[in-house]
Image 1 (spheres, rainbow, N blue to C red):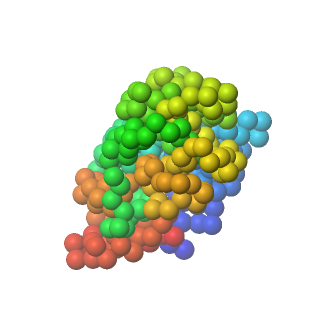
Image 2: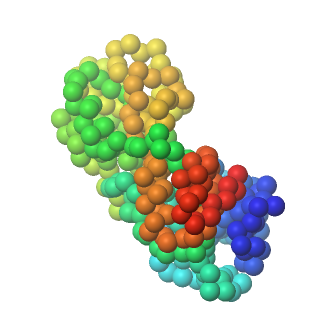
Image 3: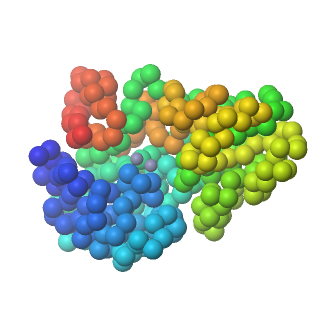
Length: 314
Ligand SMILES: [Zn+2]
Ligand SMILES: [Zn+2]
């Protein structure tokens, strides 16, 4: 089994810290889970005890509703606590509201698990915070020199080039709120609608102090009778509009092509690109790196002659 210095094991259920007897983002319910953020590939309901940020708890409660039988322990950013002698600190990951990197200290070694992260500025969530560590466990979704994300403000401003009505498909938690905030900041001439399926997530963001600007509930009648309107929708609703010829359909994603039928890509990603991953490696000072999600081989060969050891966990 692949392991991080015999301190964390990469198991079928996810990352397991045997000293602390807890899992990081387990894929199924476990006795004790530390959860980095509310996306479905990281947050699974019904573990016995879940340590996570209050915002992630609120988003999970909304997302899983009655299937949540866990006891939650609220973790504030930068407030350390201990489990079985492991000192744990959550730091903002800049990926979405409440998203955390998890720093673990044990026997004079520092282990940092990034969860999903980005360095780009994003006014809809807490900014990424750098920390030093010996062992870095990082996501590598876009850790490929072919992926350099454009500036999100330039991307969103492209929408101002037309007065045609626009639909934007975006993942319901995180991306949809970021796109809403970008539109209200940078496309003030447009009337901004948000699909009802997104309202409760938008409201949680606003409860946690992340203003998303001047958006209003989607109204089919108003949308079809006016020009210069934009509507943000989650993927399942976006797919239902696929035969609507009167609008331009964008899908917001960091990938070069969309998994959903659309006219154009809105290139906005909530994951680190190649340069961001290299910046992270440098700023943490880590000499041992472990990769998860995506493909760690580019990073491994890039750092080959640097003395930094890269291990692919997945
Ligand atoms: Zn995520
Ligand atoms: Zn993820």
